Length: 249
Image 1 (tube, rainbow, N blue to C red):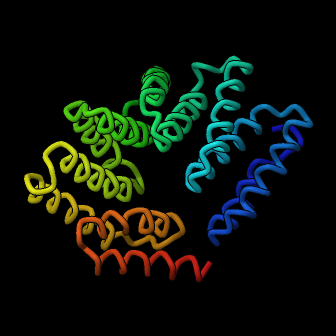
Image 2: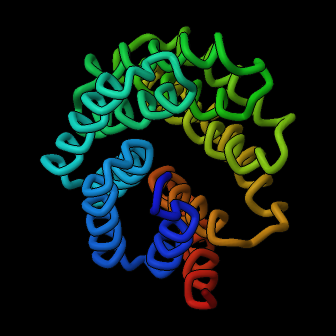
């Protein structure tokens, strides 16, 4: 990446995110994006724009997130890497931004592009398929295409169950399936199935041994889902686990 060390930039970013210091994370990314543009380092610009898009999505800053998406898609075309694995990952990131802000119809074609790239360039056991299938299924649920969504969720589980460290992604997928069942069947009719998937997710979260920053992130992400379904004690427990990890970092 030219004169810019992507590794050092990302290590510092992880420090900010590990403390939930999002203002510093944004300033850090914008500074290095400016440096990358100044030296014409397009690959580094692509990396940093991906990080910015994800950060703005997390912070619900729609205008900034959509601006990052537009810049990413333009940069992919400018670089001529439409069929590159990195472009596939970028398509997924852009699609998740669209979905997050209610633009699911714009998200699905990008997921399809990512799927096409991955299927050509990656072995079917690659763990990146887990993220693709999961996120694409979420978009399909929004569009009421439940059968297609369940098929992708189970494909994601199949990939992640056999991937090193993939158990947390399986836990998230079980929660996604629970939410899909409620959307499809209604809260009353889906109750038994929802509880089944919540309990599967809970077992994974409790048994996971590596209590690192990513585990904290997953706990934080999952906590509100358990709270939504009335598992208030477990919601507080997950929030405490995340908080304890962040405080130690």
